Length: 189
Image 1 (cartoon, rainbow, N blue to C red):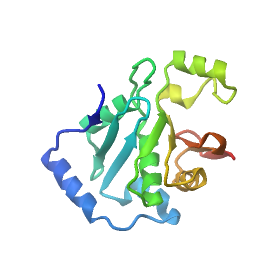
Image 2 (cartoon, helix red, strand yellow):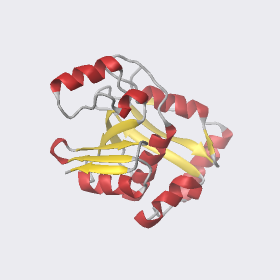
Image 3 (cartoon, one colour):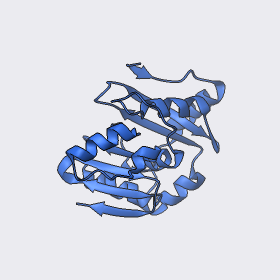
Image 4 (cartoon, rainbow, N blue to C red):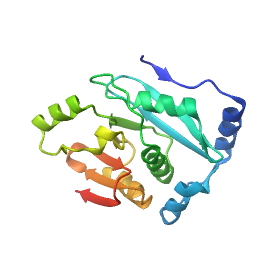
């Protein structure tokens, strides 16, 4: 499946999309954790994949509830593109990604470099790079590697760290930020 991924709009989704247009100010870094604990009525994720050519731009959470069809599409979008294996992505990671995106105050989507990784893919990447963890949270669907053209690695990593929802790795040399829903920690340079 390639091209644009989108869900059919339900009445609730349409109301959520309308509500999204009413939001004019992004939360500040000081209230990022509050945003993730329900400070907003909707959550939206925007990404594209340079590997598959796919794009996703959708509201996946409205009024305290995840939208099942949207979550399925996020799982598919964040699949291991090398093997086409799909895993349920931990929604805490998606929430961190969405919260950080709001803090960055941009409409530019993330470029997804890596979401779920199958054991086969993770083993192959470990053979090629010493920076790939044997028990990576990518294997559990709990991590994503992301970048943006309009924001620096430092800006994206500070926004993700402000969410205080998990791990944030800054990979300036490779121009991406790792976000996960594991232990709150930061690393990299």
